[in-house]
Amino acid sequence: MSSSMSFRAVLTGATGGIGRAMAFALAPRSESLLLLGRNAQALNELRASLQNRFPTLTINCLAGDLLDADYLKEISNYARQNEVNLLVNNAGVNQFDAVKNLNSEAQARIIETNLLAPMQLTQALLPTLLKQVSAQIIQVGSIFGYIGYPGNAAYCASKFGLRGYAQALARELVNTPVKVKYLAPRATATAINEGAVDSLNKALGVTSDSPAFVATQLVHLIDSDRFDLKLGFPERLFVLLNQLFPRINDKAIQKQLPTIEKHWSAS
Ligand SMILES: NC(=O)c1ccc[n+]([C@@H]2O[C@H](COP(=O)([O-])OP(=O)(O)OC[C@H]3O[C@@H](n4cnc5c(N)ncnc54)[C@H](OP(=O)(O)O)[C@@H]3O)[C@@H](O)[C@H]2O)c1
Image (cartoon, rainbow, N blue to C red; front, side, top):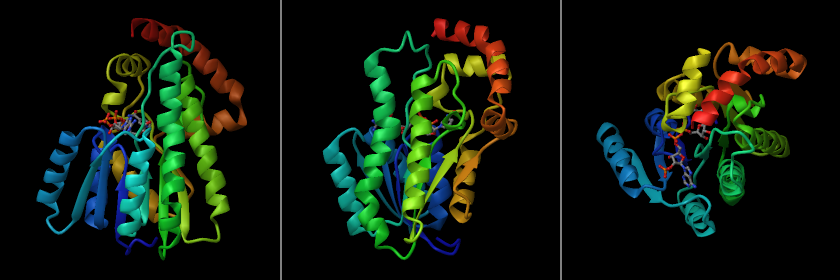
């Protein structure tokens, strides 16, 4: 997909902090945009403000739950009818807590939303994407898709899994018009972190990016030939250390553990 091409995009999690910013970042380059989320009113309000700024853009909304198989069928019908060439799997959830405190429903919800739903949506849209001159699938992962971090075991499992899925599929589709990529934000100022995670990040001096910054990086990744894009320094260095010298990260995270534990027991 060259930078001159315009998108016919499907965006999940459009009503969230990062998703909303992504919708605005994709809009100037898009012919059509399908906004997805569970809250119909929030989707309609987003559509109205986007349409106001981009009057010629075709914007549709479809409210529903990505864990509902019928909803995925509706999205895939839309994709076929509208010759979609860009899928951004951005919807996600987390529950910051110790494994011993996380109930099995919450654990399942994290894996189903962050890993299974993007896999199923990818599979459902693939026949349409393969028919386009060029197309992309962006899996929105996380720096926690490279680094296991206490209080986020299920979330890390989902984002590591999503990265493995993306890499395998990218290699499987190398001789097709479809590119598969992985965007890895670091902490970003959105509702997903409200409460314990925000105060933990402050206590540890962790920097949060703005959703608008993450959205500009999405467009850079689409325009680049890279497979993945990890956002932030020193996070990129920690990812490298985690791969080459994991004991260094083990020790650094062990030092943070009392602070982390204080925050999960407070949540
Ligand atoms: N914020 C961060 O620090 C950070 C860092 C790294 C990666 N990320 C990743 O970035 C992505 C966006 O997160 P965010 O920070 O923007 O979070 P957010 O503000 O909480 O937004 C999450 C979005 O996902 C949607 N969603 C959740 N479960 C869904 C389901 N079952 N069906 C349909 N939609 C569902 C939500 O829709 P509703 O409005 O219906 O709930 C919402 O639009 C996620 O994949 C997250 O893991 C975030």
